[in-house]
Image 1 (cartoon, rainbow, N blue to C red):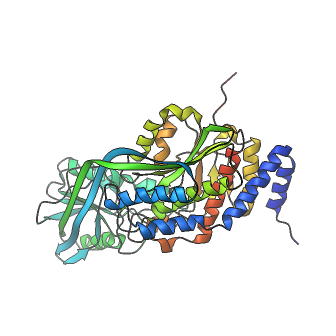
Image 2: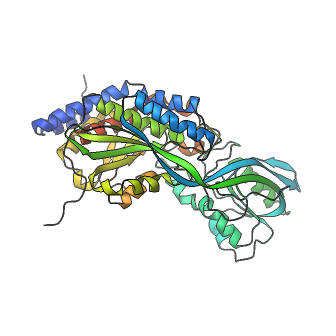
Image 3: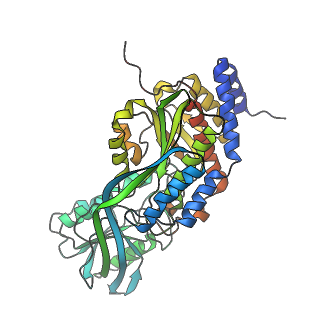
Length: 456
């Protein structure tokens, strides 16, 4: 039998640990293997997408999702299950349509961008000003787009780490405001997506007082072909939407209480809300399922020493839940050992970053030893982003982790009608649960401290 070199290294790492750390490593490996064979993660995301479906903030479905979250956490044996209410801005979609009306009439597939203003009754009809890069539109002087619909068709690159989304995201987030500054009466972008279907992808943008929509990638290219023929292209756009500036929202919380240090808390979770075209399976039903299942697995080996807290954040897509959570828990920030968020779908974790002060701790050695069979690399670099719902905690100096999932196909799906349960591979989902479960187990059953030590 051939013994893999990585397993030889792991065996050496475990053997060099003190006896207590070796026990921790054995427990972490046992939790990992239990998670790989367990269906809790799949069961949770299947239940959420089947019984609730899409969950935009401010909708009746989001109220049902709140109740589902409470019932799910109680059913899985979590303690102190409760709802933490807050209010936030909620944009809601109405009827939408777009079409080229001249010189070659054709329908266009669009989705309104969150924050978009509605068109006047009957819509608007205007010539387009097309830019193949966002910078090209920004370079236009104030007033130069008066009476026109600005269109940006810059492509999003495909990357394993999803960095292409950050590269082009500004054209959706800030683009409507910049187009309005230049006099545009409407704004459309190529969807922030790596797919090649006629399914547009929505997402949040800044309110700018003009209608703003995302085109399917193929319709963005269709407009490029039309403009290349040298004739003015005119589009008719109709969009309805409404805004509730004080919509009710909720973070849903459950815990596995620590036996020895219950006031020391590990906070993990995903966001319960979603956009409306699909069923919110990968964004972020998967993240809710991964962290909920991982916490359950970590607690299944006996009550942990520290408390593990799962949060189903209630308004990530249109913001609000992370800030609300941080404000509500600012007084316990010093006792939050570490925070982590799962919000990049359901594909495999391939690398992760830990806060450097704890990298060489025996508990993290035990955790790292459990990862070899899962083909996960622990990077020497510190975590960079963490997630939008833990940004408020990070601002309070809470340590955080980055678990990097393969995002190669994530942006084919997210914020679109293709974000559905069938896109989740159960084996990949189980791998992510196993990584998180092993991490939660080792942190909850050790004294590892992720904060920098004060200088002597």
